[in-house]
Length: 634
Ligand code: GAL
Image (cartoon, rainbow, N blue to C red; front, side, top):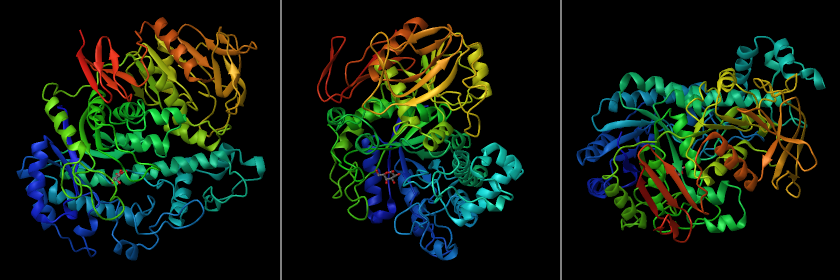
């Protein structure tokens, strides 16, 4: 596969006269892909059953004739207003019981059978129309599942579907009562139809009930996506893609990804830094116009796993966005750096969002490659520069990472349900581990929780997995590198109850978590040798050797040569020294990275990215602020 660039375009927003000029300018910039269609349902079907294809036919023709390849989006994230008259109960309902109304987007309930049918119908019609069109070379299904918190709905249709789902999973209410421990507060059910959704209870609902609802909600997304996959597959040979989001864990992306050909995601580094990442004021200040130096990398790596090796960035921030609390402009060079970083992590395509800034409606303050008056916005020249540069390094490649991090969505739901400490969150824990690996200059693969082979890696981290899957447990038993698992790993069963005998139950490693403590930000657990645990600490027992202890003599890491259990959440400095020591033992070379400088190795090249606001030295080469450098690996 080649490294390519693209852009998101909305022909329905602009007079038809400018399409050809826009297309020519895209080609002149060096773009290959143009994504269209994903919000255009009303323009395609203004009345139920009355389809108007001619404008989209012409748009595809104009773009294709100019030399562009089209990514066709199915428009199911934006059902037209008439859809509500046809299906008045299709709106999702929030946890407070309020319907989420028409007037923006994503106003549908994943469980609504009628809306699923409508989605199947429009996907099939689009497939019939464009599935063999020579210019349509990829498909995007829907747009950003869960955007605007839309995975979970507390509607009547969701309740009915949830009861069916429960009946299938547990077969009898006796089995469900036992599995959930409903004896606890006389919460037993006699019939599945008595079971409600787990909102608006007096105090916290049974965690097993919540986890079941989270699994159900995730399965509804998977099923909704699959309906469109099944409609399109027979009609096209082009790859099917979804565009996932950053730090979104409400559905199992691996399961959605299993039905698709490529995983793409929408990368808004500056928006994410201010909107959804923890960090000190100083960090947020230092990377205000660049984004967090590890956030994009983490998502590239996780979505490469979701895409089983095939990764795109479907939307790349080009300038200020409109939706974060504050929306500064990127440093000059960042629109180029972000694209190269995606390529270094294996992306085949990076598409900027969007072509021209729209002077109307919700996103009028969101930059594009062009200004609203069609003048060039700063990112246009940077995109053109990347398009030139990829000609020298055309082949997409992710390379073989020496280190892996296991990441699991179910565990995220488990810890959301019973965090036990206000700041215990799966993304945060996994990201802390990932950042430490990156500060050590390591390239990382992210693995799903049911992976059955670790032999390609010298070192594996598996923090926070509520339970080990059978394949992963077997892979760990065979593993001859160094695996550090925990905290909180393999301590629960499938229903979020504690396992007895107390977990983890590790192959040939006698260690159990006998008590857990969460730690407020004002406190920490000091370790011998100077480090500390924050947020979380587990008291361990067992015969396995103690490899690190707390200052007051409790085990902090226990285990043998290959498999070790970590009893707490290391501070950043502690993670750094742990990673350094483990890597040395495992025979992995580390490179301590200066603040803001990050590297990623492919099979052939080492890429160096400068996220810092000032120039930095890299082995005698000066890399300017927002600069990218690459060198061939020998
Ligand atoms: C994405 C979305 C786009 C657009 C963009 C703005 O979340 O997929 O349609 O809204 O954000 O940054």
